[in-house]
Image: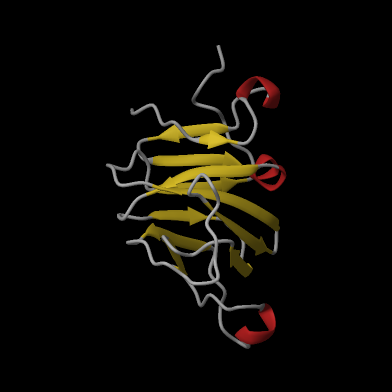
Length: 153
């Protein structure tokens, strides 16, 4: 099993028992922690699937010059009102693309992009760092209760 360096905007010691479980290339994150904290992830050109386990009602990205996303298991709409009878996705696919310079859009100083995802189970915040390297993980699962595989000792 690879040791995955997933950054969450809290430290393991501040959060108590590890909120992460790592199995192969899948990272499992406790739903209650995911709704409270910003989840920081690296995104490669290969892509990353984020399974929220709840229908997605809206998605907004702060800076889209290097990150694109789509729904994997349903139709991703701008809002619930625009979807009509379409089934909303529960899984987002996110990947890094070659940089596009948008005239009126400024990147964050550290090169990251924020993605805000509203679902039936709550709001999630992701900070994506675009990287060009072999991915250490290709899927993130947000789950009700995660049994930690990593120890903070």
